[in-house]
Length: 122
Image (cartoon, rainbow, N blue to C red):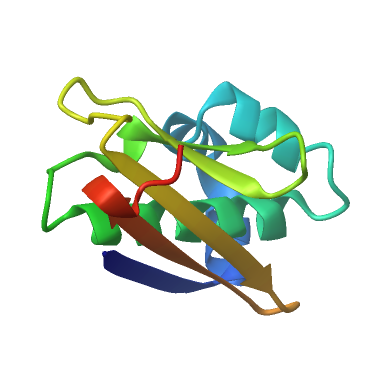
């Protein structure tokens, strides 16, 4: 089992959204972008998603090298965030990842737990 965590100031992403929206958009999947802009505070939501991606990246790093753009955070039918890794060497049958996202008005944070092998519940 591996754990990753990340915390960011929401204002940092708000500033980037104003100055370089196209750059920010390249970091996120279309589904993440659409989901964030359906919320009252897109910057807060995007920062939470960014933190989740970073947390997943950190949890995966001892096992497999992936880019931030290989990680998509989708909303599970039950409402919780579900990371999807789009990488040819990631074996979904051998890994499971749980993510938790939280934020205040100023900061967002996320934690990810990577389960491997016999710890994976199917």
